[in-house]
Amino acid sequence: MEFSKQQLAGLVGGVVLLLGIFLPIVSMPIVGSISVFSSGRADGYVLLGLSIVSLILAFINNIKPLRVTGGISLLIVVIDFIYLLYKLNSIKGDVVDKLEGNPFSGMAEAMMSTVQIQYGWVFLFIGSLLLVYAAFTKTANKPILNNIDLDEQNQPEPKVRKTTSTKLVSDDIFSHNAGRRVETPIQAVATDMKLCPLCAEEIKLAAIKCKHCGSMVEETL
Image (cartoon, rainbow, N blue to C red):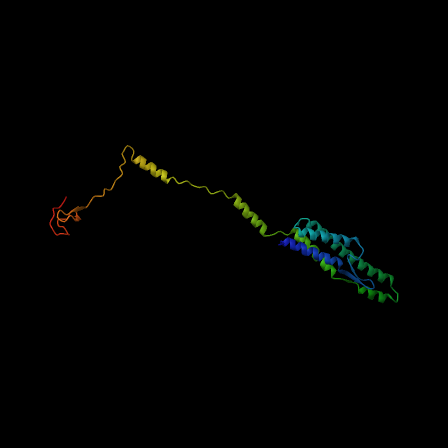
């Protein structure tokens, strides 16, 4: 079974997005790594459903609906990423403000500095972008083939010219010989041999001497 360029992009995008849902997107002290699916938010379940639907659509070569699934997936990933960055910055600011003058503020700041964005976002972004790319890209060979088919269909059928040379020749002969009796020359095959009167052998009609008996014969005119 052969897959088109759009199908391959859709299948790869769906698989990458599906992996990104379960890969860590942020690591925090004590809590550890957190993925979109394990965060408890509804976004993880929505992305999971969109990735599965996208895989099915790409497999059956129904590419147009990938514009919807890929677009929604990319929108959710972008919103979640911006929300996470905003949330981390706000938490760090709150910790600094609340623990100001506290002897444990340095420890809290050190713990907050260990909060890091993880590689799961790479899979989420690449998977979503591949789905959008598969939905909007066009196969380069398809329009060319369609144009060739249209040109072949619009091409007029060649007209077969009937030759009239035979008719013209016959007409010319008829008009040339109109009122005349057409005489067909018959090549007469003349007998150019005769019999010798003495030896009765065949000799040429114009011969005056027999080549067989050597006798003189009269020339026949």
